[in-house]
Length: 353
Ligand code: UD1
Image (cartoon, rainbow, N blue to C red; front, top):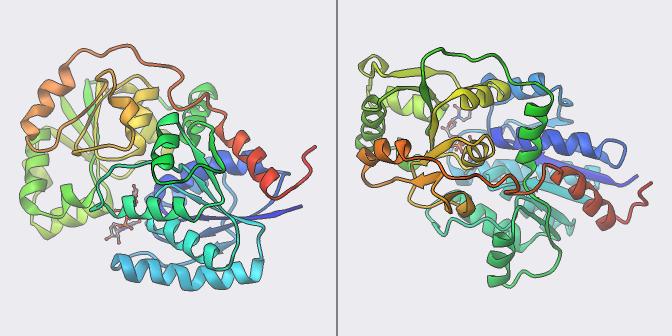
């Protein structure tokens, strides 16, 4: 049986890894490395517990610090592990520093890289994620993309081989959750908007963070804000008191089912997350994205996702605009993981039964 080594490290990667692990069972010898990029209990361990995922074979502690130091620490340790394990392929997900570290190490050891969620572009090179995904795409042997748009973006950069449209693995996870009845009871009787904000450009300057919180304070219904460790730290550093924001219910970062449940029962989502824009779309919720651009351009097409960045007082109007029809086939049919396993099996020339 071929050996496939997967690198995970940040919250969305634990979620993407679950459907992959399920689909890969019995097909590969799957070795998992957790870089430790996200390390708080409710940013990491809770997902393994809730989803019943296998304990990573290797647990690194490379989280925290500057981007260079963090990525460098990951690379040093990943190189040792990959040399020891000698996998037939290395799987990386998305656009985080863990993705880039895994891809760079594998490429230098001439091990084929499989990039799950390839071909996304924000065209904002100030975002570390944009650099991480561009570099990873260019050194990958197999690129799994969610839509035709990504095929075009890759073609513009000269990447035309081994690109497969399989849909989005996060859709697998959302559909599994809804269809298996894993959503929980409605968490709050009142109507509310659900919110998550953690991008450095929204959190790392006091004025900007105050604007975000003031916008939440002004909304017509309560804003339930699942606060990322970065945002919490920034509020502490800037001496911003949660108690000043009476319209905001601050909650810890939520486990997966709880997070999806908050979204499912909400009136709308306010976010700067990549993944949650899509989750809102699949659950047919209005989304206001607090960014100047998005990789998930298809969600913008009929106005169900709206970008608001410079003037946050526009959130209220954007969020209350009527919703349009949602496409049920956006980013695949919830069977991305199975197709990925087939593709990787072929790459590793495994005989599938
Ligand atoms: C990372 C990813 C981003 C992804 C996001 C999901 C990169 C460049 N960015 O950004 O693509 O959408 O994860 O959450 O890889 N921290 C804690 N506890 C934790 C995790 C982080 O306190 O469990 C702190 C870190 O020490 C740091 C800050 O939060 O001060 C941000 O951590 P970082 O690793 O940069 O990740 P994100 O901003 O979450």
